[in-house]
Each structure stands twice: as structure tokens, then as C-alpha cells.
Image (cartoon, rainbow, N blue to C red):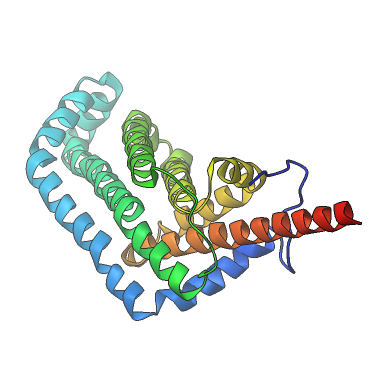
Length: 272
């Protein structure tokens, strides 16, 4: 299939932006179907077990490292000693566990996201193809390898970036802005790839990712903001996969319908 760069991404009543709301509405319906309710358990259990293992293995080393790091900061040490001298509390004693938690929670979270991208997304795509997109033919190649590689580099960059920018959290605006930005990056870069790589060929992927880039990032931003609400953690891995999948597959279907209609028109004109 040849995808013209000038072809409009509209083959029905909804365009790229409107299809975001359509994707969310369809995902709500899909989420309450039995198979997708069962799928909620996998990333949650993996994230929970991962948090326990990470805490058991890394809690003490991380706290020790943080205490040494904070102790080597003269300004912080002066404030800490001043508070202790007033008979209040040691800032290090309270801050080190909070920072350690701030490191371990995203590690467990991104582990759950990687699992959702690599393992849950194929379940989601298979379910949606059966229920909503039976006419959409898979044209992707080496989808699993592509997905795993994408998850590894995005997850690695997320963890490194999170740790590098963690000291900026002591400044109030960054404590809210940075987590959202990193989660937007991780969610968008992982799920826009995994939602399309099985069904779209190389040309279709490049075209859709280029034309729908802003919409993908908006969906990622919505889920990054929802990620700030703790109860949402239980459903976000699967629900976000559903939204990205519905959005990608619907736009891919419309793109192919447009290309098929254009090819048919060209053939008729040629015959005439």
C-alpha cells in the first residue's frame, strides 16, 4: 500500500482529533468485557510483586546512598543540624525514606507499563480485532521484537531521566511537573508503537505517527495526569492500552478505506 503524504486522514464522520473521544468511549465499553476485566490483574500483580522485590533488594542501599548524598550537601546539613538543635526533628530521617519511595514507586510503575506494553497489548489487540476490527488485516512484521526493543529503551530512558531529575523535586513546581512529563513520555512512546506495530506496515506506521503525533501525546498527557490519582493505578495499564489501541486501529482502518476508495476511483477513471 502506498500512503500519500497529502491524503487526508478522514474517511468517515470523525477525524484524528474527534477519534480521541471515540477511542475513550469504546475503551470504556471494552474495559467491562470479561476478558479485559481479567487482564487488569496481570500488570497490577507484576507491579505489586516488583515493588516488594525492589524494596527488599534496594531499600537499604538506596536509603544509605541518599543519606550520604544529603550529608554531603552543606546547605542541607546546616538546615538539618539547625532543626535538630531546636529539638524538632532530623530532616534526613524523614526525607531519605520519602526520596527512596520516590525512586522505587516509578521503577515498579514502569515495570508494570512495560509488561502492559509487551504482554497485555497483544491480548488487547487480539480482543479488539475479534470484537471491533475483524476486517483489519495484520501487515506488521517482527512486531514482538520491535515492541520489546521499544519498551527496553523507553523504560531505560524513563528510569535514568527520573533519577537524574529527582533532585529538582525539592523545588515545588518540579515535584509535580517532572513526574507528569516523564509519564507522558513513557506512556506515549510505548503505547503508540505497540498499538500499531502488529497491524500497520512500515509506511502506514510512519504516516499515522506523523499525522497523529499531537493526538498521541494528548492521550499520553491525559493518562499521565490520571496517574497522579492512586486508585487509577489499578486500571490504567489495561485501559490506556485499550484507548491507544482503539485510536490507532480506527485511524488505520479509515486510512485503508481512504486508500481503497482512492484506488477504486483511479481505476474507474482509467477505464473511462
